[in-house]
Length: 224
Image (cartoon, rainbow, N blue to C red; front, side, top):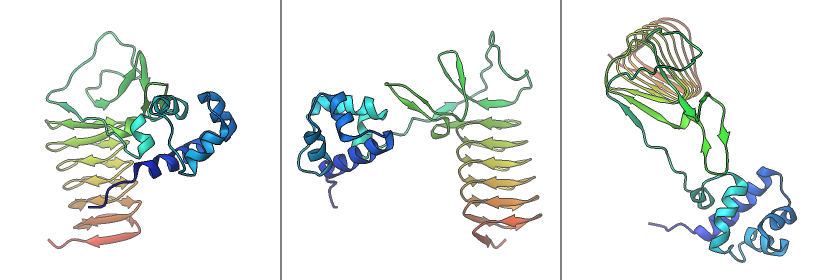
């Protein structure tokens, strides 16, 4: 197996992240307390920054240190055995018994937006919730994995993996499920059984039947 050249990856990441932040070599060098010639050598692969500078680089670029070496750390999934009901919060919805996957940053309710500080970068759609029961409706900014059926609608900012969906299934990522009682929509692909309504995917639809209209780069009808 070919090993990764982390020195080369580091030089390429510094160059890409510096340009992404709109910094010149001189501006980056000033924040790090080094010469712009040193930054130039890093980006050209002629040398590497001192290990003590890596946390500073990560802070300036607002990324984890692992990201400087091309390694992305995926958050651990949140496993939910039973619903948990919060009390005493001023929430922007009523007590409608619908499960919503949300994350708080302090007292702030987070949505699709990315929240960045010097400690971490948060994107709700990167997270995964695993539900070990069959909810009525699910609305989450993250990925959803239901170990059973969703009786009503399923909506996720990330992916959806589940059994049957009684209503509509809508995901920013992909959808992998059983039958869909309503419409199915995904930013990625859709792999399912029967879709009673319309089906729309960013890449491929693979299912047994579609009751309404279908739109995708590729549509594959599975044999029964």
